[in-house]
Amino acid sequence: MTLSDVQIIDLPKILDRRGNLSIIEEFKNIPFKIERTYWIYDVPGGEARGGHAYKENQEFIVALSGSFDVILDDGNEKKTFSLNRSYYGLYVPKGLWREMNNFSTNSLALVLASTPYDEMDYIRDYELFKKEQL
Ligand code: TYD
Image (cartoon, rainbow, N blue to C red; front, side, top):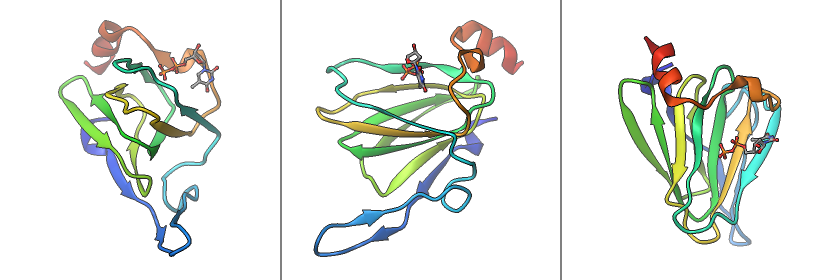
């Protein structure tokens, strides 16, 4: 996949004076079935997460709280997406190198994934990733 397959997706937002509410339904708001959910939190200042690609797994990333950057790389170009609202998210198709950094204090990154955890699905070597794009 390339950076042109990446999408910022706006989520429904139910505004209410009691507090707002947003929703994600599989296949309706995001283009895959959710097999796994994880979240990243308590990230110390200056730390980065990610630094890998997935062969099959697709993800949808939402900044439920605070802000952070997701840097995506398809082997040809890199793009930084800043996430800082809980009513939209970033759809990351398979096969892109991704890093996450610039986490604000108390930020909370929700990640919905299309496959169960499988270490064999990871490409953790950037040179190998680049080679596979050729
Ligand atoms: P990793 O995906 O490398 O984290 P990040 O990309 O955010 O830096 O995962 C870190 C560790 O957590 C690694 O040892 C595998 C484990 N892990 C699971 O056991 N299940 C999961 O669903 C995820 C995402 C990670």
